[in-house]
Image (cartoon, rainbow, N blue to C red; front, top):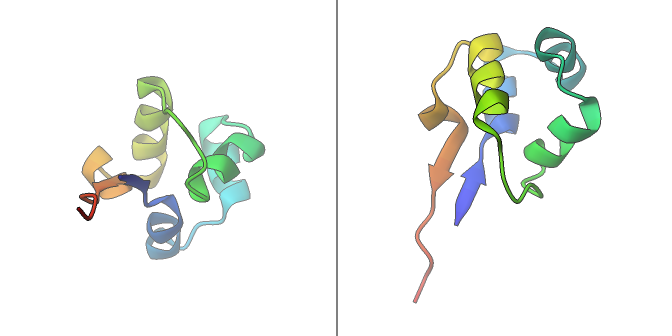
Length: 69
């Protein structure tokens, strides 16, 4: 499973979702979908904008959790 860690990165950077939306130009509803892990895909341009605004790497935003079998 792929997990988007946007909520943790926002907490670490002490930034609100609305501030991130203003900094990136990404719509608040789209950021909310990412934050709640309901996104099915993410564009590289979106990932780039998030990393730039948050001062982080893609590896800090995205984690892989192996399926339990």
